[in-house]
Image 1 (spheres, rainbow, N blue to C red):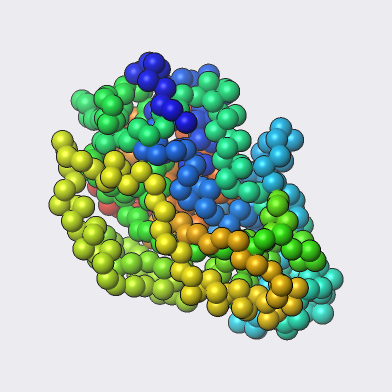
Image 2 (cartoon, rainbow, N blue to C red):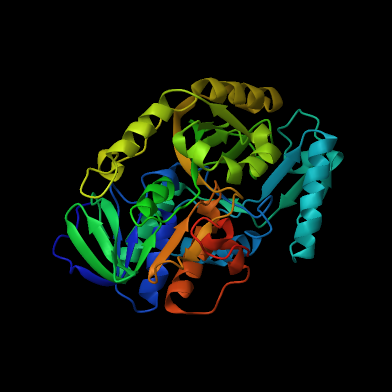
Length: 430
């Protein structure tokens, strides 16, 4: 996808980041009549937006995110009527392997019911009706028949094409080097090909958002987490619903194979930012430490070197890393696949077709930042989706468009402010 060098250098809105959040935001802004450009240091949708598990779910979403998950459903269904990108409303089955997990799932279901959403609760004996392949003993499960999945790479290709057809200008292979601040407000970006002027600018750059905000001296508490995935070759007789558990997670793919991963196998590395934001991240880390492995080593010194090179007039990391393509954790994936085969013998003949990994942008409370930046009028952030951005991406983009245009506020929008972290001299709270 070549950059559109002939496009004008002035837009109503300029967006840094061509992932699902940036593209959905651009699409809804364009539908509102604004001129919009999306800049990506590589190819739109290449990083985490096309590497995730492809779930479109409500079960186990944070209560603050649940309205976005529910609002995204009709958008996914509408778009699936326009093109085949693998969207299926196949249901999601979340399994508890013991009473501790079952108690936690039921507590979530109680909170969801109070918010107007009621998934089905399945006792152990009822689980085989939806998942006859399993030979395991499960304490219970939640089931949402309206949850589903899509193929992330195909969905991103569709959304980019849809946004382009609507008039969004895409500048691929064009790194945004810095946010342009003039007279106390954001008025564009400095890119590697020159200055772009805009009335509003949006940082939707995933794991790169933290450093891009740093060019405007905005503190965004954000860390990186790496998650690994495998896919099998086509297989007959596997489960139809998306299956989530702490032992393995699996979903059927459009090509007849299965995507397999483990939700509690993500890895984060000790970096300079890990020390900087330790106070903000520690409470949630202590609650979720079973879901995450912390590793020390080379990444600390790599990021330290990058910080020393970072700054105005220098080559920033957005130019040096056109595509984030980390090595998958093959050992963990192999162990996960063995657990799946032990529970579902149908997978014993399955062949692994590929393994890959993606890097996820996370915040201290695991909620996204969908927010204006009080320090600089005209600057907006859409980042920190903490492993659930794909499914809620459509409604998140709609929320951002309304925020920029002054449209109708989304329910719960107050939960997603940057100010809640209290890092930039703004009033804290939601």
